[in-house]
Amino acid sequence: MIAGISIYEILTLTSILFFIGIYGFITRKNLISMLISIELILNASVVNFVVINKYLYPDMLQGVFFSIFIIAVAAAETALAISIIINLYRQISSVEVKDTEIMKY
Image (cartoon, rainbow, N blue to C red):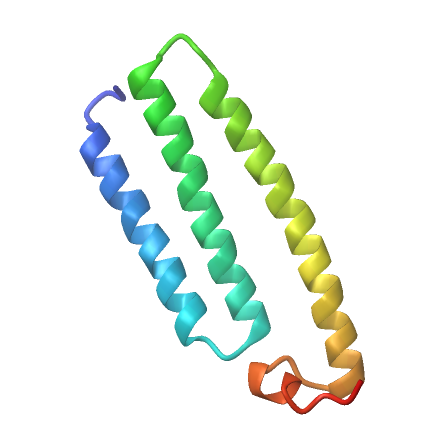
């Protein structure tokens, strides 16, 4: 694999990152913090794609291509989410989740 680092250590790290993202998404009350947690989850999955591809098929690049696709989708998702959050902030002057529940349409 990588010199001095086993696949178990990398998968442990990405699992920790994934669950930190899940915990952050569940416990945060701010929309921006929730978006950052979602990005952390997606980045952990990207690293998993690359590592598992490198471990199983070292000569092929499918995991890298899937990772680039996930990064592109994450960038589009972030741009869309930020525009929605900015629009919400303009309407209710807050980015807290509890304040979006009382928004009038």
